[in-house]
Length: 565
Image 1: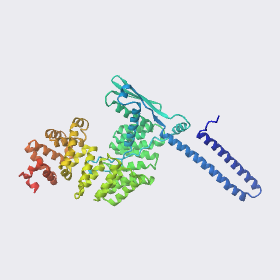
Image 2 (image 1 turned 90 degrees about the horizontal axis):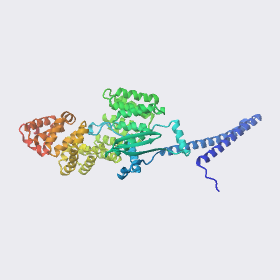
Image 3 (image 1 turned 120 degrees about the vertical axis):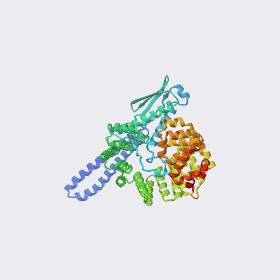
Image 4 (image 1 turned 30 degrees about the horizontal axis):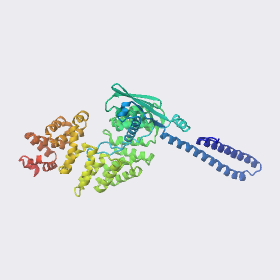
């Protein structure tokens, strides 16, 4: 019977012992020869030869040792990928009948984990592209790290390599009367969540499972996810938990995340304090210098662009391959109208990271400011290719079409508008607020396109008024939808109930909407007063009267003639 095949580590161990034995022989021979020839006064000549030979052999053996260590590290990293296995969950029969068997639930959890990781690592500007000329595309992203390796975790990985079973996540979902419960076992810890058994329960439990697993395995990534989700208290809670656990070398990330959360909550001094703490742990921590620069650049109390630039340059000094400081540096130059220099910084960032949609968008924005619209559109298209749901890229294209004025590609404009509306129906607002774009939505193909989105928004009325009443874009989108579907009474009610918020955010569109509603409802005095105020706000507002049939009669009104001459 043939002997059992030896495993790789047994073969490696044998070779290592042989190498050590050979190395000892070489060393012993070297010493003996040295002593012998020293007596013969031939030490210098003969030992030089022996030194070269011995050194060569030592180097070879050391290299073999390094290779062996590299192999171990490689296996550790390779096994690390599969170190956590999520087993198919046990589920009750009725849930299986709905299509959620154990494997489906398992796959759904993994998919949700990937969504969370993607959002945590997503590049975002500091505000939505509600108004193109108001955006500040400063990089606020946290490049996420895992929790790092402690001695214990490396030991666990080595045990895995030596044939121990990998860590697993297991659990079950059971029905308890009118409730549904999920029980999970993650790295030896138990988790349980119970919810009312309704149509949304299973999706909520899947999200709970994904978050629980990431919290146990990659806490900093979850903290970054909460920051992106504007759940700052949760991000700080996780970071403080990490500060009380190993490895301490990662505490710099915890302080950095707390600082980011504090800044986004408006606590600038606290944000700087925690950023400094992260630098006390690692004075060459590039991410912290970037964070500090962002705080200085966007500060509402102590805005200091020059100091912000110094922080960006320091971040680059300690990490020349770090793209984000170049992006923010480029934006500073953009605001200073130093377009050629800004383009250089953005292009440098692009050379370091060709898959960051914000960098591509930034290059497009610089070209747009340089009035090189075709180049700008090209980069905006590249940006939305990376992320087809990146609304800012679509609006960049639309803005370029608008600013071009002559030779507008209407097919491109229509297609981009259609795609943009599929992503964010609130973007209808811009077409009403912009005098040039407003002309296009009076065309039949655009009217037909927008009609569907008015209907969708009107149906969402109760949800919007209950859950998005603080979102000015949501409320304005709702009131426009009622107005454009000729439900003027409902539209007027919303204008009046949300007057302060809508007028502050969209003064011209607010007055325009009131004017249309008052006119349609035959409230003549109120309509005339609003028309005068609308025209006095901006003389270019007279453009709206030429394109909306309901407003054309005002062109001949004796009290308004002076505004149209």
